Structures are given as structure tokens and as C-alpha cells.
Image (cartoon, rainbow, N blue to C red):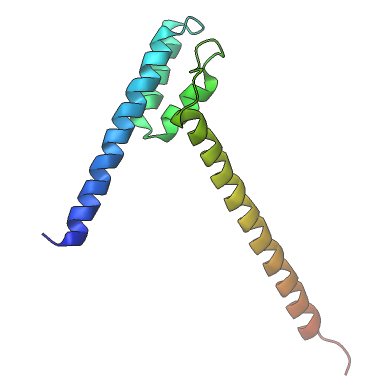
Length: 116
């Protein structure tokens, strides 16, 4: 087995362990919630366990404030990390599309049939 394969399997194993830990943490908080009905809790459990890592962030975001974890930890930090990733990717896409629009506009005006 090549060293790169060992590294990939190790990274995958750590990612699976992280998801199991985070999903267990979120499931415990959902079970302690009195805000949701049992059917809603089952739907949240499905989101937690079937959407790796992102499902945990979604469910912890919709928990009522009295059930959310009060101590600072990795879960609130994870929310800010997701928001930063989405904002930076959206701003990069906007900049790229604006640059392409200006370039296309300049090409069409310089090549557009003027009377010479």
C-alpha cells in the first residue's frame, strides 16, 4: 500500500469519526429539546445522520435557544466557518462574472461593425 493511500484512508477515518461524534452530540441536544414534536425530531435525526457534517450544522442552527449549547466550542465556530466559505465563494463568483461581462462587452464593442 502506497503512503498516499494510507494518508487518504487515515483522513477518511478521521472524517468519519468526526461525523459520528458531531452527530451524536447533535442527536443528544435534539432529544433534550421540548420545542419539537416527535415527528420533527425524527426528521432532524435523519438530517443529522444522512447529511454528513452539514446536517449537524443545520439542525443545531434550528434548535431553540434554550437547548443550544451555551459553552463556547467547535460547533459555533463551525457555523462561522461555513458562512465564511459561502460568502467568499459567492464573492469570487460575482467578481469572475463581472470581469467576464466587462471583457465580453469590450470585445463586442471593438469587433462590432463600425464604418471604417
